Amino acid sequence: MKNLPTKFFLLVVIFFIPLSVQTQNFQGKATYMSKSKMNLGSWGARMSEEQKKQVAARLKNRLEKTYTLTFNMQESMFLEEEKIDAISGATDSWGGYFSRGDQYKNVKEATLTQSQEFYGKRFLIKDNLYKIDWKMGTETKKIGNYTCYKAKAFVPTSELKWFSFSWSDLRKKENDNESGDENPEENMTVVEAWYSPQIPVAQGPAEFWGLPGLILEVSADNTTLLCTELVLNPQEKVKIVAPEKGTETTKDSYVSIVQEKMLEMRNNRMSRRRGR
Image (cartoon, rainbow, N blue to C red; front, top):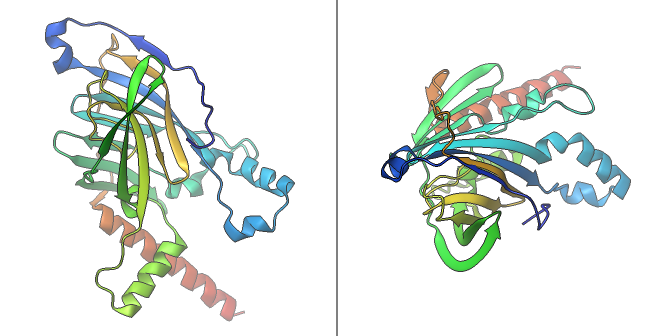
């Protein structure tokens, strides 16, 4: 775990339904707190501790987020809670371009539908879910009242961050193209998850799914998602509806669209500088 307390309170609310329809109608709503460790690289080595604190304060909305996952046995919807910037009093619209949009998963059909907005245009990404090859262990720990089991996997980094943008990723792509490498080495991210078979759904937050129980905690790279509240079988039925608006595309095509636009913006900026 990174940047999260070792002890926390998980609020659990359960509304019981008849045993004969439990599996068919099982549903719930989970709240997750996300915390990311700030990575300043070589730039950070030249900064004082006070300067690092100031940067962390300005980036708090990107480093600490709250999400909700509504789910049933087959479907789930993962949404980020919008926050107001404590310094400027505005929402982080530019950062939102490279954040995960409203995400719908259908684990029975292994499909993804995700809404993304980029540069004033809405896209509807429809694609297959990446099937994670989990290695399940015997190590356990308690999260709230639930006994959780540990699972690990190696997942292509591109599958976890396709909706984001990185100049370093673009440079790597350009270098691979220049070298003629048709099968460049794929960067992998180590993922560690804690799931509970007591909650019999193969659901989880973000891109994570496919374990024999709800994922209550997951760490990947420098980010940890931790469930802090869980409501099972609410009296009011949970409605899960996939996003529908936007230009339909795939994950790979969306990545190309964003990269091409960012390159265009960079080239235009360089042309204006040369013209001065």
